[in-house]
Amino acid sequence: MASLRDLGLSEYEARAYRALLRVGATTAKELSRASDVPMGRIYDVLNSLEQYHLIRSQAASRPKKYVAVEPDTALDRLLESKREELEEKASQYESVVDELAVELDAAEPVHDQFWTAAVGADETIDLLIERLAAADESLIMVAGTPSPQFDLGAVGDIVLEELESALDRGVDVSLLMSPDLVESLPERVGQQYVDTLADHPGFHVRTAENVTGVFNLIDGVEVCIEVPNPMDPGQAFALIDLKDPEFAANLRETFNPRWEAAVPLSF
Image (cartoon, rainbow, N blue to C red; front, side, top):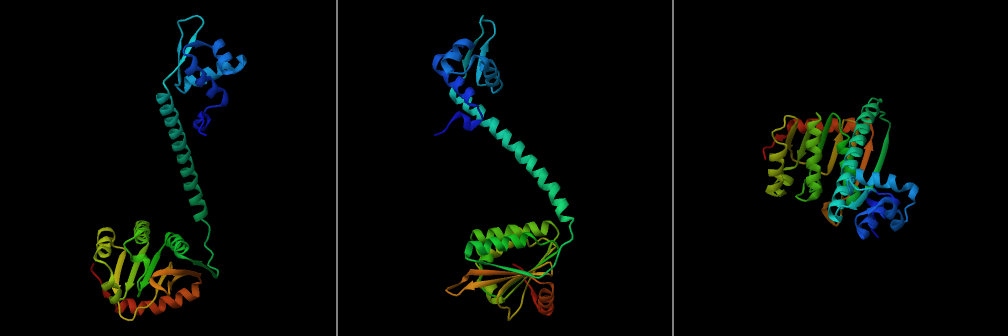
């Protein structure tokens, strides 16, 4: 059950405000009895409620009397106070993240061999987006068969956003596709790339025959290989992420001549 405590009031503050709504304008002594807030605490509670702008006081009367503001107004003020508190917290966390990002990025990267895999559509996309976001220098994307990376749904939109972010942070993006895949893509996919990426100097797209499979080469040291669903080739079944500089270098050597011979594509 919802409580005023959920919006930041203490138990005594909540009792006092509810009692003021019931009894109307009253003194601190009378409110202490009506709310079961100890007399030794009632003035602190009333001062706190005034700071929240949940009550008003009649200073001219002797003894001083208090009245509650209307519930709608009180709840709006409590909600706004919580919003400001959360925004301040978010700002503090963002500052912490900025400081830690500088500190952690200063560490020398370790390029030991390591591999992991994700199985299932959601897990595959999560891993793919994570690795795309990790690119610092270069991102080579090779697609010879249908892939959710280039669809019109939520996955394609997320990948597009990650590519845009990568370009904004200075990553060079090269996309090599088979002509058959280009022909199979809905026109709107090409339009999305035109609207979002085509004019960026770091984005390059080419087509070449005999391009098969789907993989991403990240910073020359890491490879993400998409495993298609055998029942639905347009959907990813799994993603293998392999961090192996030697394997990545060999893959780059195979890629380079195909890229040089490929035909630039205009969407």
